[in-house]
Image (cartoon, rainbow, N blue to C red; front, side, top):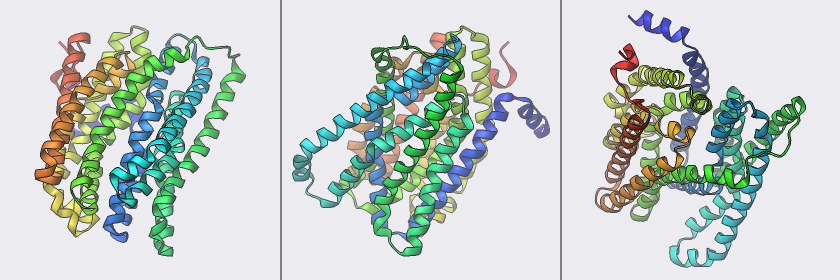
Amino acid sequence: MVKGILKRLKDNDLANKSFQVLSIRVFGVVLSFTTLLLITNNFQEDLVGKYNYLNSILVVLGSISLLGMNSSFLQFSGMLDAQNEFQEVVNIYKKKIKILIISCAVLISIYLLIKPLISEYLKEIQINVILEKAFIGLFFYAISLLNYEVVRGLKKLIQSEFYRNILRFGTLFVVVIILIYLDREDLFLDLFIATFILTAIITSINVIIILKKITSKKAVGETRISYKKILSVSLPMTISFLALLIMQSIDVIMLKNYYEYHIVAYYGVVMRVSFLISIVLMSINAIISPLISKLFFSEQKRDLIELMNKSIKLNFLLTLPLILLLLIFPKFVLSFFGDNYQDSSNVLIIILLGQIINVFSGSVGVYLNMTGRQLVFQRILLVTLVINVLLNLTLIPVYDMVGAAISTSISLIVWNITGVIYIYKKDKILLFINRSVFYGSK
């Protein structure tokens, strides 16, 4: 039976590509977690908490400045490919860079204007310093995220994964090793920001080279896709992405408001571990995102259904062993980060319950975004965000990390199940583990 499954996976083109991407992502995860292990075992817990806090702030600011343009590029590239107008991606990228520069400038200007008010309200120098570092790295962080998706949309999937996983985490790994050797952990946050400057420069050079090849093959005129069109597609995506990121970050921020940095450190590690089970799904999504758009806009529904069923099946088979490992041995896994982190095992189990639904729901968010339902996805996530904030406000002051975990888990279940129901009603495609995924529809 096992041999039969492996043979079917080997003959499956989606599986083959997924394994390639998964291999790179696994290596990236190894780099990321090795780096995290070095940080948690060699740096003070307060510094680990500040790192998690800075990362959370940067993620939220980056999603605001991007305006969803990284995700929308995949929809545009798939749609233009289906219409045999792929060369228009060149002008789309140029317009998105201009929008990004303006949005970052606006955010930084707003921060500088309200900085005195923030300082008076927070009355904590350390948080002010962290905010300053976040705004310094904002543009570089945002353009790196944009370039990851642009390279993927330009059909350079392996390059995209290399930048997203190897270059990004590998650079941070080297930085941490050097700081430990020099005993200069005080420079960690500054050099963390510097890693985004490096990745922004390298990925931008690569994008320019790829776009020049496209323009040399076929003349590129003014694209019919205007700034208004770009924003009309991108803005709902950024609101959705921002809602997701706020749900992933608001618990960390609120924990800091009520508890010390070491609590933030414990919870941050638990969240990183829980995200491990989504690595397969993210690898699959990296491949099928532009394909969903291309098949949908070219009205190849049968092929689209087959693609989604294959992705759900592959995700289930590859993810289940890791889920069982984390559920059965949570303390053992957390022990690698230090003895104190083992006490968060119950928090990990609670979050995993929501992550299981998230993973087994398939590519709900990607499907909605790639098929022009970005407004629907936006509304689903905004409602879920309200639920998440209310739960965090209610539970964190009383139950600390456990309250944050419950809020996160419930939110994951709500938006995924809602998305599954909507897609099934509209397109008759069930993005969840079901009999037809394994045996085909009757």
